[in-house]
Length: 112
Image (cartoon, rainbow, N blue to C red; front, side, top):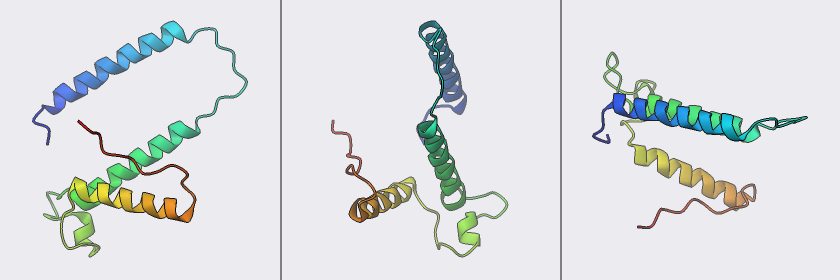
């Protein structure tokens, strides 16, 4: 998809993680807390897991099935593209905005 080796990306992520850990260890010391809120972290993890499962079930053609699990289950008639997942996200965001449960607007495309 990107033309870059998976091992290169994994090594880059490991290197970035080590640098982040070193910075955290250096600057966040002797911090006394009574309560730590991790709602945002869990929300991010939940969204990441949901995206993974959507890709796994709707986009990825499985070797043994030769179709996606969603196609095998009769939920769709074709393998989805990543742009289909993005469109679904934008659609659901718009519904939340219209319903009043999302206060901010949808994400905007990055302008060059």
